[in-house]
Image (cartoon, rainbow, N blue to C red; front, side, top):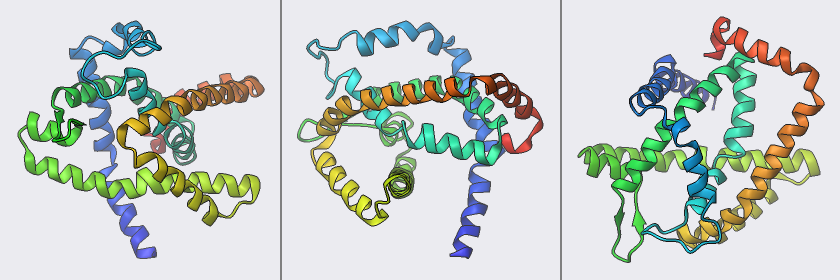
Length: 254
């Protein structure tokens, strides 16, 4: 196991080195500049398209509504990324990591917009009329690199066992164990059963469930954040100062 951990550390250092971070943020900056800051120009339009049609009959060829698509995406983000991921980054990189996370988030909006736009552009219907799309279709139909599409699909499949399942299940099980003393095994069984009941229904059932759950998740997340900030308001100026200060002086933050 120790050898596996060392190998994983070496691979992480190669894949997630400074060059990868520069490439991710650099791509976001480049797309933001050539597209004229769409995350700012289309901010109002975004809210109108997502929330302005709630309660209205869905139009267009999409399998789910804009709000359902947003809820489905947020369901995999709020928690693992916003809580466990940020906490881990601050623990390993110090307060300066917060600054770079904010920078990458701002420019990452444009990268995500382009990714979603291309996914819609190159999506296809299968034999039973369901939409199929994603990065694999972009690489295959858009870039004409079928081998790269297969490679991405393989890596995404392998990553789903770790990033998509293990991290979230571990965070849930650990939380219930520390908070209520429930053994990890039983939490895992319950989570597996509930997950199976949702995913066997396909995209439609996933979007239906997340449409009801995610708004409550978001509300609790925002309220929790406001409470934490309010209780520690006296330390907010120092926290902001440290985030900016150590962003450029602490090599672990970058």
